[in-house]
Image 1: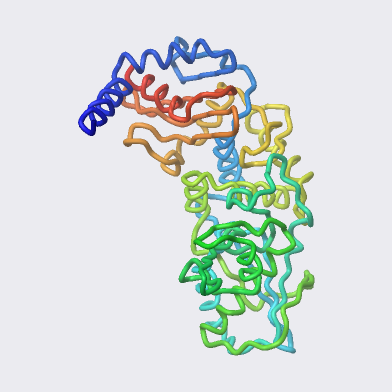
Image 2 (image 1 turned 45 degrees about the vertical axis):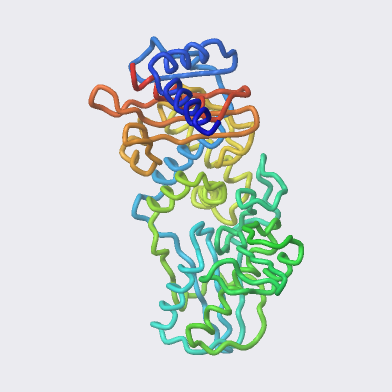
Length: 389
């Protein structure tokens, strides 16, 4: 029985990797009524390439491109610190999507280098983003990919929690246990979990809780309460922290892990950058759509930047335009056997794939949008079929 099982697996692997199967993948694709395909310089295989489709997470490539056009690949996002005469330290966030526990350690080293030895209160200012941000398509689950957005956030607004019969602890060595972590942990079964904060209003508080413990771990004397109020706009920062990761590294992580939080933090920040603070959904939609209009002359609204919304539409041919512009940044995408650099996209009933195939000694952009149920690996078979031809 065991030998028969391995024989069957071998036969299936051989079948799925064969030229015949690859050819049948393209044939199947052409029989799908809600599928589109565009390959640069290969009109033979183009299929309904001008039909607007839901792009799912392939939209992150467009978001990445707009961010790179707005700032630059070596841009580092900032966080400001203000220290008043009472030794109350205020942290003002501007949406930096990559403030991890490790980055907080780097922040505190910067503060210590400025001479900080004690604080008598910790204040957080998250006014750069509007309250109650609604992202179309975001689900109200505790999964990490459904994390809320905020101007000040740590660990992508997620919590790593371990619950055992002995109690609740942090699920990661670099992040201390905090009151909010205990509160969320009480709702979870035993085991190790990664959950999101669910609501935007918890984000700045969680940042402050983690930061406060980190300050103490670094030998800074801490007293006083955690508060939340807006900093004076004319005040000169005591210290301005530049994230150790640049925009290219942030985008590479976003594309590799299909991180919705990073994508929509960038979406919100684009709104504030182009239309003034505070960042609002309305401004961000306007700014994003205006940038797209200027670059590609498409006249439509984009509702968010991660590909969660089914109100976002793009055609396969339009995605080729995006990919041509994104070609210098191809290496920020996840690679498949060094012959495909591409981004997947998945929603219920939506399977997409867009990027570059190495054909005829050059990188060839392609875009595959399927807006009907299909197996998850089908898009890979289509891409391999295109490579083999």
